[in-house]
Length: 365
Image (cartoon, rainbow, N blue to C red; front, side):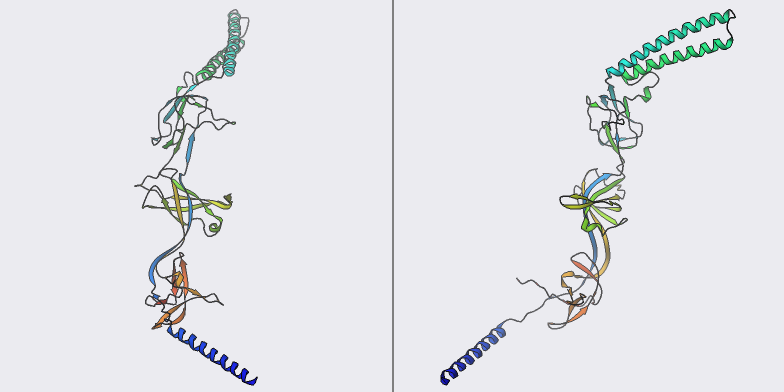
């Protein structure tokens, strides 16, 4: 019995010893880990937030008629420059039968009143000639007769306006002539000859005859996600890129951030607006889609390192890197970081431009 136990113990020792020797052999046969290094570089680092939107005029004026009717003539088209007061279109009035009938009745009533006051004035003139009434009574009859003539003339003009949209003596101010109220470029003319238009009043905004804007004053209007809105503020610089204009960046200034967000596709979006700086050489069309890079921070020509080379202490969370001091020998250096764009990070202190930083997280092929 004792002999069997002894043999078993000896066999176990042999197996353990053999396994240990095999492990050490395999360990020594593996190639040692060789770490690559990289040196810092000089970079201009820009931290950005991105917003999508479009280019729009700062002020767009919609020209609407003051009378309903049918477009008879159009004198402008999209792209034309106009001045305030220039003629844009002419409307042919389609009279309202009820209003036309009321105006005709008003003429008849004014005619009856005029005839009555004429007879009264003639009667008062005869009596004054005989010395029956005073000068005052005659003058009073004259005033009443003149008022009746004025009322009759006004009724006729009212009838002409209802029927044709204008009358004698008011041709320059006719409602049928649609004129520009501001100077600028015609962005669009959404009506054609023969289209019916509705007047602008308290109950209806009316039909748009033309849209006019100053194309030298354009803005970027877009939206940012709620995760980014807390990082931005007014007066930040914007870099605008327009999809239809290649290889060109337009500068702008952020001057509006909506105080209230709106839900779109399950995310809260905040509207922003930025005024573009005037471009003398490039014409930007209204409505073009654009992207805006909001410059949150910028560091020009600073010592930078790839952000992936930075490590963080497990306890203090302080950043550090490992700098090569000899052949595959490294020492830890605490660093102070600055602006980061997600790829490169500014290194304010801790290393120099000649230091070789360990690539501690290289991806194996």
